[in-house]
Amino acid sequence: MNIYLAVYTGSLLLVLFITPVVILLAHRFNIVDVPGARHMHTSPVSHVGGIAIFVSMMAVSITVLWLWYQTVTTDQIMHVQLRILLLAAGFIFMAGLIDDVKTNGLRARTKFIAQVAAALMVCMVDIRIKSIVITDSMTVDFGWFSWPLTLFWIVGITNAINLSDGLDGLAGGICAIVCGVMAVFAGSTGNMAVVILMLATLGTVTGFLFFNFNPAKIFMGDCGSMFLGFMIAASSVLCFSKSSALVGLTLPVAVLGIPIFDTLFSMLRRFLERRSIFSADRSHFHHKLIDLGLTQSQAVIAIYGVTLLNAGLGMFMIVTPKIYVLIVFFCILVLLLLIFHIVGSVRLEQIKAAMQKRYKITHREHEERKSFEEAALYFRRAATFDQWWQAVSTAAGKMEFWTVDLTLVNRDGTSRNLNWSHNGHDPDPDPEGLIQVLVPVRDRRSGSSLHLKITLYKNSSLESAGRRVALFTRLIEEYDINDLRMKRRNSEHYGADRTLLYT
Image (cartoon, rainbow, N blue to C red; front, side):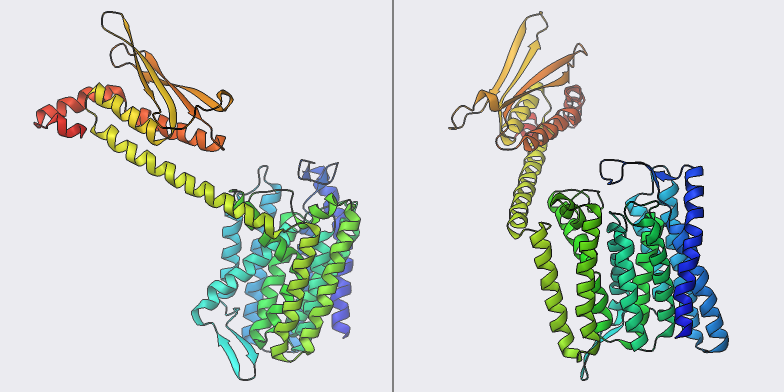
């Protein structure tokens, strides 16, 4: 017990000493987070607090684990696993630090690759979710699937913690609660190494919160949130791999319910809005609480409360018979869904409407693409100007244009107008709903530009109208009038029947 108290107290005191130094150096070298549209703070704040977290946690845990392995245990396999785990955590920290210090940051894809690489490092030393014991007579063995499952687990939780770092003290408080719960679980299974790791992390985060709680003097940044997320995820797998108890997976998910669900719903929301799932927005769970009228501190404390409630319920899973763990876990998930629904982060009717809208847009895009490809066939066959104009008219009909006009200048200087119009039975559209576009077409004789005048009805979507115009202009650009003479010469050279070219 004394060693556990020393680990917690040592990391707490060390981070209290290091953090002010990091704040001073960050401001001196102008490594600060400038307020923006997505930020809650109003003045520049240092965002490399993860340095203090990393140094304090690593210094204490490595020292204690080294002494422990020198005097208490000779488990060489665990020794290797811990070294690789801490090495991978250091790699994640460096990736996050580069992202924090670099002017434009790292691309989301680059950070994702770094997370996968770190997760692969721990998988290679047999830290994997290999099987789950559901009952005394029922065990699920994942076999080769343990690799992708472990990668998904580590990368998912790392990003969940990273995305939760949106309010002062939010990610740190959640991580502190998770570390405390995992330390208790690891102690119950006799995994002393994980207890030391989690207590060192707990002490570090607790001390850091003195500077990070609202109003924050420093942010942990990506180097801190990614490091904490990776340590929690990898340590949970290390602890689980020694027992295979079902609670080893359900307990972290229950306690991390807020950031995990928030990440999943954010990805779903961005997917339905046809945005990158890595794009930023201001619709996270904590943002919804702010929109309801809570202050930053009130929102953070509210999330602390929900997390502590989940942790308390999760503790029952440690002493619950194996099969009943799923019942407790299911109740926690239902509670979380209810909370997200009350706050407004998820509405089933909104999700349904967004899915229907996305399906309609996707179906519309498919039809427009199909029309484009069919129209392209006519342009490929065209070997004369008349055939080219017929291809233009065909494309206009397939893309639901209203009219197409082209004014030509004859050799004798007189002008000639070519017109195409929609011949359907639809009523004339409202003039306010019509869009007119001029498409430049290079004259094959003079080299100057003619203009195709397109009129189309926007229907219910300006986006669809713009996409159809873009596809049409692509046809005009790819199948230039000036290419007709060369195509005609080629057809005459090979004795092709021009009638067949047109049909």
